[in-house]
Every structure is written in structure tokens, then in C-alpha cells.
Length: 277
Image 1 (tube, one colour):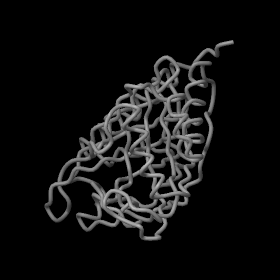
Image 2 (tube, rainbow, N blue to C red; image 1 turned 135 degrees about the horizontal axis):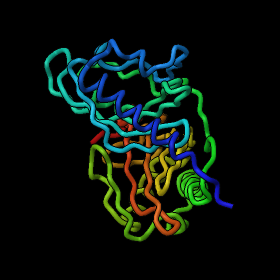
Image 3 (cartoon, one colour; image 1 turned 30 degrees about the vertical axis):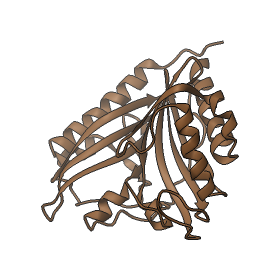
Image 4 (cartoon, rainbow, N blue to C red; image 1 turned 180 degrees about the vertical axis):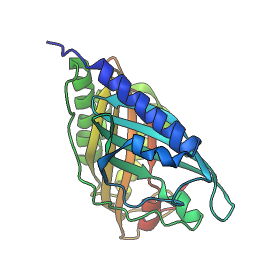
């Protein structure tokens, strides 16, 4: 039986988060932060990156998925650092809303960009608690889409069974990286890319820390761990560990992934001994 969705709650939460970005991160009216953040707000991000009030930056929301009490999004920050350098930064943000305000916040930041500007982006591991699994009511289709994505991380990325990739991805699926075009479109290119990746990190494992699903979209926060014991992309083998966090959005069509977007913490790759894009 298909579950009836609380569409009003999802819409209200999406509107609140969009209003938050417009008010705080575009108009810089930080004195209104109390209108958006709950008095018992819990911050799980490693640090509050960049300048304390971010007045030198403006944020645009690129993608947003509202799922019951959670809103996950991609944001692009542009502007200037305190030193006057131009900056363009991609982040992924997850908000849990309660009683009409943000009660919890997690994020994934491309710390490689911050490091290039001399800004400390915090540690690889934030200590933020994972919240795996969907929360609240979902349609049968949304649950099936979430299971599809979780199955891909389990079978293809953690168990390295690339021969199963076509179970999860359309042959002509499209790939969008927020920073680079290094991964081309299509299933064959996908399999070749990750064959090289797995050869470099034979012990590669993925952990889905957070997942949301709404309509034909699924978004996840993922932690990738492994050891660079092979050569890949002009680097290695270094023997160094990888602990990399990504946020990935999938558009599901006819039971398989048709499009994929991602924000990647590339500083983790650099620390493992690989060049970053």
C-alpha cells in the first residue's frame, strides 16, 4: 500500500531553508538567525569554515531535496576571502527541522578549495553521528529508490562487484561533478573509472551516513575509506589511508540511476597521496 505523503511539511521545510539562505547568506542579515535556528540547535559540522559571518560570500542553492523533517542541498559559495582572493566553493548541507526551525546541521565541504586559500577546513572526520536509513513516511517508490542506491554502494563500491553496475545504472546515465568533468557519462566509462579506483584502493569501503528520498531523487552523505596501495590518477602507491566524504544526488528513472551529481571533499584525496582536480 502506498503511503500518503506529508507534502505540506516537505514544502514548508524547503521554503524555510530557502528563506534561510536568502536572508543569511545572500542578504547577510545575520541578526535574524534566531528566526531559523532552534534554541536547542546541534551543530555537527567539523568547524564553522571561513570567516565568522561570511559577509564576503554569497550562496546559491543548486539542488534541494526535502524529505519530511530533513532538507539536503548542494550550495555554491562565491565571493572573496578575508585576504581579498576570489573564491568559489561547493558544499553539501543537511538540515533536520523541528518545530519550524533548524534543529541539527551536517555538511560536506570541498576542503581542498579552502586549503588553497590558507583556510583550515577542519578534520576529515567530523565526529558527527550518522543517521542511516529513511525517516518518516515515504511512498513505495521512494523506498525502492533508496534501496536501489544503498544496494549500489554495497555491491558495486564496497564489494567491488562492477559486473553488477548495470543492475543499478542506465547504460547512458549522466554524471555531474560540481567541480570537475573527470568522470565521463555512461556506464562503460563509469566501470572503467572505478576499476582503476578499486585497483588503487583494494580495501575501499563505503558507508552511507545519511540518506533522504523524495519523488525521483535520492541524496546521501557517504564516507569512503581505504588505503592507497596501488597507482591511480598520477599518484601512489603511498600506503596512506583515505577517509573521504562525499554527498551524492541520484535521479532515478525506470528503476535505475539516470543522473548523478556529487560534491567531494578532495582534500582527503590529496592527503592520501593523489593529485586533486
